[in-house]
Length: 268
Ligand SMILES: NC(=O)c1ccc[n+]([C@@H]2O[C@H](COP(=O)([O-])OP(=O)(O)OC[C@H]3O[C@@H](n4cnc5c(N)ncnc54)[C@H](O)[C@@H]3O)[C@@H](O)[C@H]2O)c1
Image 1 (cartoon, helix red, strand yellow):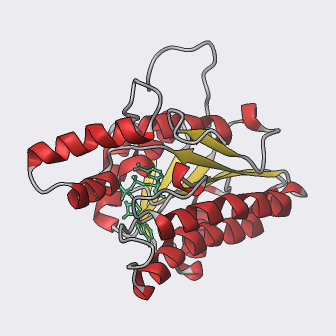
Image 2 (cartoon, helix red, strand yellow):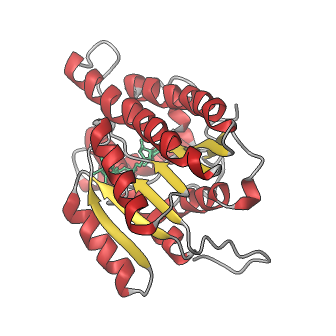
């Protein structure tokens, strides 16, 4: 964990299920939540990545379990939650972080890609919330966190159109989920990251540049173009720390919010 703080956030004895945790932002969330003493279920469609990460976390002396899951399938999502509940006797935190990006322009994006974006990004988050609230309500407490994006705050010109649509939808679903969870003390919030150089952004850079040199230039240009704050590159951990705060009892009175962690990319 980074730095030293007055407050230490601990999630000991809590169970956290993180969808899309096999790499990137989800991986950082799994690491940070494990360090905060939660038992972390690392759920991903790429099971091998989840297994390597869970083993690494266990080797550090923390608790993690790898599970295969396709978030676009409600039964698959619910099965992960059921497993976590059965094995630990509780379900405290769910993070709906799985996502994909497509980069064609609004007019050129295929029906197939739009459907895929919808199924994984939007329906995936919906599945985690619906199945999650149904399971969590008997405990009369819970924290659900969805990963949106600054692209969900306002349309971007560079071909993020249908991706942005799903991310805007996640913000709406977060508010709807917050209403649904409120009667059971279940908080539902979203985080809107800016630009993080994960495999997802590597894919975006692939489309911007052919040569390696161009690629680094494209990265610097992207930062300059999208992110006002000069320190620029965010790390996956920056998102994970906000998720940790939202999952803790320090955030008990925060619900239905979408929090920008993006260096100022979106200010609404
Ligand atoms: N990287 C960025 O700059 C950025 C910015 C804003 C928002 N986000 C969002 O953050 C989240 C994580 O992105 P990332 O950058 O770490 O990307 P990533 O591609 O590195 O990781 C995404 C993870 O989701 C998993 N996944 C994909 N489809 C799945 C499915 N159907 N079921 C289960 N798991 C699935 C992948 O296997 C992968 O492990 C995404 O929702 C993304 O849209 C990323």
